[in-house]
Image 1: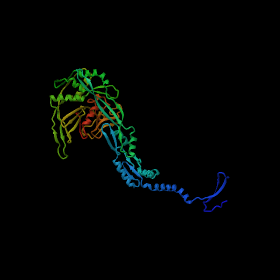
Image 2: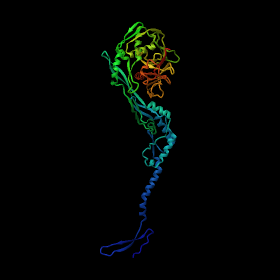
Image 3: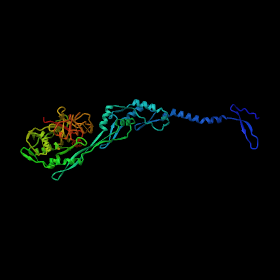
Image 4: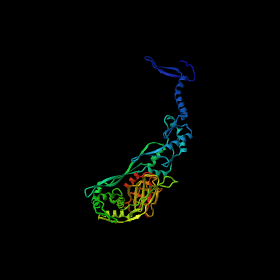
Length: 490
């Protein structure tokens, strides 16, 4: 029996059974010593790793970075530095919409009724920057959603005016005339674009001040009048165009040829798949009558004055002269248009009366518009040259269009309207080709009223309504600042 040596407390006796070939098995007792260096070498690596992780988690907060919009700032920055960066980024941030007609449009957070809640955003950042995950991923900037304050009425108004767009297009359809010629009839179509979930989309983009471009998607479409729809109307159109027409002015007889009458004729469709209506454009009839009158007697010439300075008298650009007009000018175009639709021949006997000229004072601007509420006619001028005459419908007696001198203050391709322009009309969601000429009054496309009201009746709640194709032309012709003179013969 071997006596064990007492090295230290970690030594102990081990009994081991050994077998040798060709001999009896024997039991051997020996001492196995556990070295303290060997013991610590086994525990040291995990202890060091844990210590390193703990120390890194403690000090790594100094290396964490935060991304706000397009800028990156250390998380160790003071609250004041974070506040300055948020204010700068929120001022520079703009929503960007890719529209089908105007390219990319940009709008600020304030335009959309949104604001970065800076105190609560800083509080959120401080909470997130101290998390273990943020510290372990120290090399990757933290892109945290900010806290956004929402002005809901303003956001709703922004969505209606800026992210919901209706694009109107005109299409000309050929009609064969009975004498072998052809004429074009105008038809309208629209394509509506917008965001699928506008409110949530805008807020999600604002949370990270993301500079992504939002593409407005197609929402619905109304097709224009097709050639097939025209087929059943061709015989009626041919009767209207080919009927005899006699207009007698001061004893002289005038016979507009079918090509001229065809130019007065348009088609109207109040809704998709609705029945087509034939309409005589009274604005074009009025232009024809003006040409007759000017060939017989001089018409009154409006005096145009330009105000060049507040302390100086206006400069006369064009002197005014008295002249002659049709005694029944307010109803003459209407009577001729109504007679045409009956297809039984038109005879109109008109007389002339002398009238005084009007005076208009403008700023130094080349284009201007005159709207005569009595005649329901809008005339567009460049200087003293008449560019176009358009039939309109204006405010009814209960909500008349105000007279006076105005200017186009703002323009919108379309606006959403929550008020009906006509109590007998269907709900109007969109008003196209809008031009504001005073705080609450507009010139715009009116597609919900029957086309026969233009140039004849006062049907609106104060706005000056044009047929959509005419409104589109005026919208593109008259820039912001164009003078608008609204007059009445009454």
